[in-house]
Image (cartoon, rainbow, N blue to C red; front, side):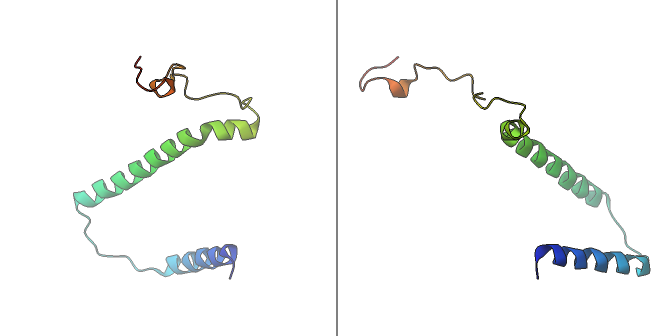
Length: 89
């Protein structure tokens, strides 16, 4: 079964079962809300970091960037690894 068809069955199954769900008599303490908030904020932070890592590729794909941009402009050309052995800068 291909992934699209499987996802369709999951969505269809959930949408047909939810209207018949009985109300739960459950207690949610304050730590549960904090845990849910932490998961949501962690997901948002993960999305932001992922977007930041791939932003230059997205700009190139959309044609907003020329492709010869370097995101690391703080690199010195006279790096110590380029010096001859035994010399220090």
